[in-house]
Amino acid sequence: MPTDPLHRTIDAIWRIESPKLIASLTRMVRDIGLAEELAQDALVAALENWPAAGMPDNPAAWLMATAKRRAIDQMRRHQLQERKHEQLGYDLVAEQEEGHADITDALDDDIGDDLLRLVFTSCHPVLSKDARVALTLRVLGGLTTDEIARAFLVPEATIAQRIVRAKKTLAAADVPFEVPRGPELAERLAAVLEVIYLVFNEGYSATAGDDWMRPALCEDALRLGRVLQGLMPEQAEVHGLVALMEIQASRARARVGPGGEPILLLEQNRALWDRLAIQRGLAALARADRLGGSLGPYALQAAIAACHARARVADETDWPRIAALYGVLAGVTPSPIVELNRAVAVSMANGPADGLAIVDALVGEPSLQNYHLLPSVRGDFLAKLGRNTEARDEFERAASLTRNERERALLLSRAAACGA
Image (cartoon, rainbow, N blue to C red; front, side, top):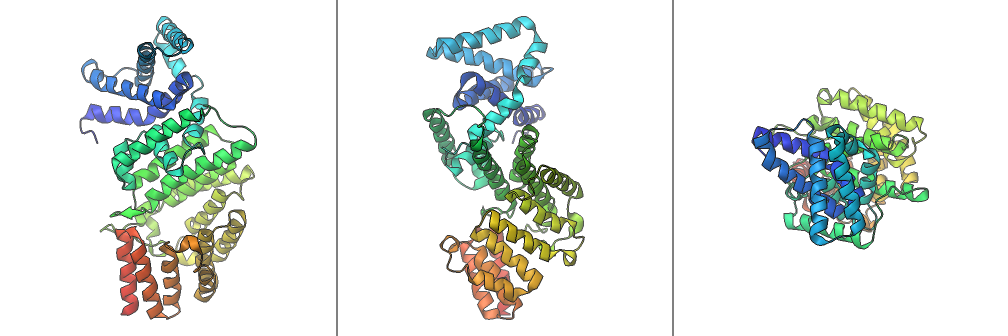
């Protein structure tokens, strides 16, 4: 993190403006990798020039003009297509003739469309899920490879390699810089929403490492969701995803104790929940409902989160409604994870024996064999039924499967409590 005040300001500007800058450059050069290089060159130029010359009146327009000049220089050096060279040269000359105000207009021109195209390009199905996440955080989140690597606890070289391969894959596949239409839009939008939610979930419940949460990732995912919300206001599931993230993020302060230890939902101090975030989430959920998207998977999960948000204390939670919503979600997107969550809701509504019956049916599910939450949930039900020896074994198995140190400590403490 930069420590100098001016460098901190430049870093903040970069994180806000880089997606728009890269989007506009990608429209011009039709290569997301080259566009990012040009944008990075403009950032380096800002770091070199602004300390001496002072901050320009419009930093975003300055970065755009600089990147366009670098694009022309690069095309000359590498003798790229004459048509692109002439078009970029014409754009730059026109901007220089029309003055600073028109540079700003050029920056804003079609920027919403360009950003939307960049979102869909970064999350194209031709890329692996890991590559989509890395590229999205890089070009849309403005994160460095080091920041992404630290967030996901993998070597920086691994992230760098994923990003490089992603750009090469997009170029080799000649992926068009456009928003898909018709049936393809729904399929591609699902991939975009999945990537954003993957980023949020990694921040909300870290897969591995010493921290239970990584709030910066939650903030990046929320920012991307809000951008997409503004770009696609008629898509109900976009509002559903934002609603879900807002409501879940509202609990952040209550989810971690003074020593960094996890605090489970029913034990949280709800006075620490962010009521403004909850209001934003409920408003987004209402928009999804008005657009007819109340049965989308993200809107359904947001409706479940809203049940928790509306309960002033844990005992007021409407567990029968939550169980019913999970039943609907299981029909929309059937998966063992949804069924496991439904088991928790059913146990709270009807008792642990009913929840255990659902979980026992999942024990042989191949995809859950190394999923630590299956024995964790089963251990919880067994403990409530007084079957402490079995519960201890389940908690110990769950602790052996998780890669998060905070979660491991919590599970081992629950195992010890069963032994006592």
